[in-house]
Image 1 (cartoon, rainbow, N blue to C red):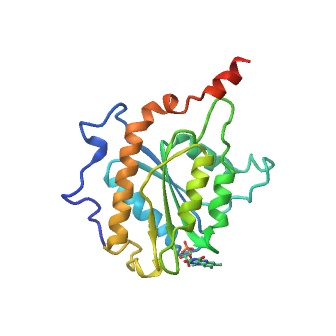
Image 2 (cartoon, helix red, strand yellow):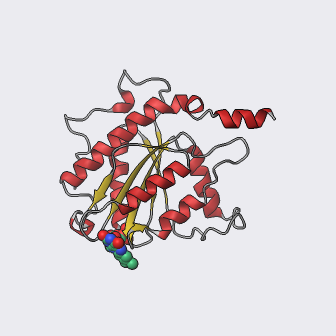
Image 3 (tube, rainbow, N blue to C red):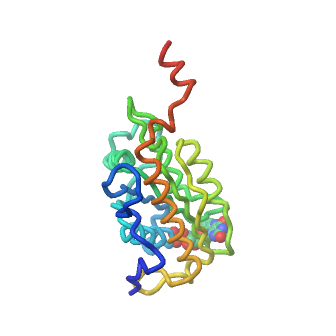
Amino acid sequence: MNTNYLDDQQFDLATDPMQPGSKHKPRMLILYGSLRARSFSRLTAEEAGRVLEAMGAEVRFFDPKGLPLFDGNESANHPKVKELRDLVIWSEGQVWSSPEIHGNMSGAMKSQIDWIPLSAGAVRPTQGKSLAVMQVTGGSQSFNAVNNMRILGRWMRMLTIPNQSSVAKAYNEFNDDDTMKDSPFRDRIVDLMEELMRFTLLTRDNKDFLVNRYSERKQSKN
Ligand SMILES: Cc1cc2nc3c(=O)[nH]c(=O)nc-3n(C[C@H](O)[C@H](O)[C@H](O)COP(=O)(O)O)c2cc1C
């Protein structure tokens, strides 16, 4: 089993004395876009979760099984919808890990995002929060799902970080115990999680400052 999530090239960002502001563990929510029993987008998400924990984050996952398809707001009281919305509010940063299906993110991935409201009263569940996007493919490496999740991240007014991960032929990349084989694909995920930690630590205390908009100030004055 590969337990070497941190080696001497990496450091624990959460306890680094240079980190600004709040000292609590960065709260990371991980969403994945598949319901399959052995899903490689979930295994990739779980690998990312172990890396984030080793870097000092508090990590939670949402299991999309049982989440109804988006129906406006009619199923808003469904327990899975409530669970998802509570986790999103709790989070300070997020990871979205989707398979590429027909050249796009999966429906299971998109449906989760569709359930997240841009604002719920005074609460803005996603606005100004950091986001890392990852995808797996069965074919050669492509970027359709991550590109489209970036668009979705913008719609949710999130800070989608520059780095990203696309694991090609994902069925080749995992050990029998479901951990990820040592490879450039895995190194890239460590890079991505490190960047997510850095962006989250830099921005989480400045969210209100970053998302303050002229047009909204103007609207609330009238
Ligand atoms: C209906 C369908 C469409 C797919 N479309 C693509 C695709 O466009 N590009 C690609 O590289 N792989 C494609 N795949 C392969 C999946 O991305 C791959 O099997 C992936 O591991 C599925 O995600 P999961 O393991 O998390 O369930 C497709 C698979 C299915 C079943």
